[in-house]
Amino acid sequence: MKNFNRTRRLRKSRVMRDMLAETSLSVEDFVYPLFIIEGINVKEEISSMENIFRYSIDRLSEELDELAEAGINKLLLFGIPQHKDSVASQAYAEDGIIQKAVRFIKTNYPDMLVITDICMCEYTDHGHCGIIDEKGYVKNDLTLEYLGKISLSHARAGADMIAPSDMMDGRIAYIRQVLDENGFEELPIMAYSAKYSSSFYGPFREAADSAPSFGDRKTYQMDYRNSDEAMWEHMNDIEEGADIIMVKPALAYLDIIQRTADMFLKPIAAYNVSGEYSMIMNAIKQGLVDESVIDEVLYSIKRAGAKIIISYHAKSYARRHKK
Ligand code: PBG
Image 1 (cartoon, rainbow, N blue to C red):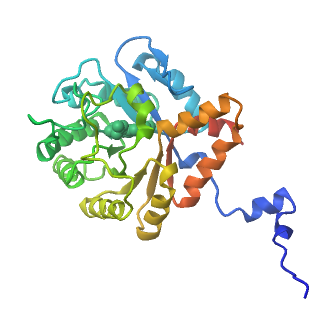
Image 2 (image 1 turned 120 degrees about the vertical axis):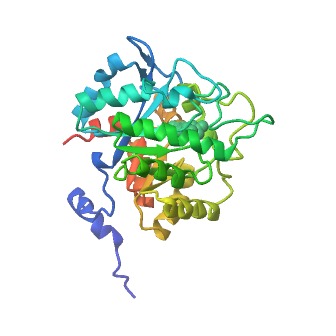
Image 3 (image 1 turned 30 degrees about the vertical axis):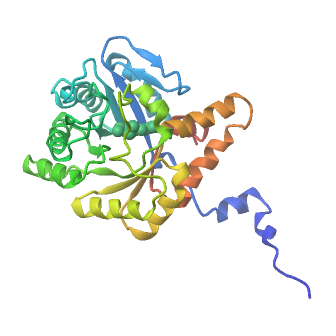
C-alpha cells in the first residue's frame, strides 16, 4: 500500500517552515549578565570569556549603549568589590559597587530592568556563599540575616528585581519578609531554585573572583545526579514566595527545565552559564562549528520550557537577529 504520509511536504519552503515553527525566540526573552568592578576607567576582558568584560561604573555606558542599541533591556548585575571580608560587608554597604551601579543605571537608563544577584561569594574573603563557622561549614540561619541586609540595600538602591543565588534553606521566605516589612512588597524575587553544584561555573569564578579558598559548594548546591530534589527546591521556593524560579546551569539540565515546566505554572528562568558560553565560543574560534550553534542552543533552552534566558550570548544574538 502506498504511504501517503510525507513529513517533508511541510518543510518545502522557508516561509512554510517559519509558519510552522513551534518555538520562537526574541530579544525580550533575554537577560544579560554584567560584571561591575570598583575603580576608574576599567574595561577589561575576562580571559576565559571572549567578549565579556568587567566595567567600572564610569565606563558602563559603553556597554549599556550597545545593549540598548541591540534591544536588550534586562540586566543581571554582579559586583566585584575592592575589599572582601568574612561577613561580605561590601555586599550590603550603601556605597557598595552594586548599590552605586544600580543608582547609576536607573538614573541614566530608566528603561533597563535591573536584576541584582544576591550572594556573598564575591564579597567574602573565603569565597563561600555565607558565614563560615570554626569548622568551615556555612551557617545557614546566620547567613539569612546577611542576605536580608543585602536584599534590602539593593531594593533601596532601586533594583527592579532581586535574584538570590546562595542556596541557603529558607532564604526566600526570610528575604520576602524583610522586603515586605520595609515597604518593598511589590519587589519581585527570582529564585535560583534548582542550582546545581557545577564545574560549568569555572569561568564565572574567575570573572567575579569568587572561587572558594577551601572546600567546595556541594553542601549547599545541588547534586547533578538528582532531579526530584530540584522539584522539591522549586516547591519550597514557590511556597516561600518566589515569583520566578530558575534552573542553573541550562544545557546539561534541559531535562530539569522541561520537568519544571511540566510541574509548575510559575515563570521559569534558565541560566546559560559561563562554562557553557566559553565552551561554544572556543569551539567557534577554533573553527569546529559556526556561530549558528548559538541559536541552536538558545532555542533548546526555550523549547525545554524556559520563559527567561539568562545568557552571555544575548547581545550577539540580538545583534545578529536585529530586524
Ligand atoms: C553566585 C553565582 C555564581 C554564578 C551565578 N551566581 C557562581 C557560583 O555559584 O559559584 C555562576 C554563573 C555563571 O557561571 O555564569 N553564587
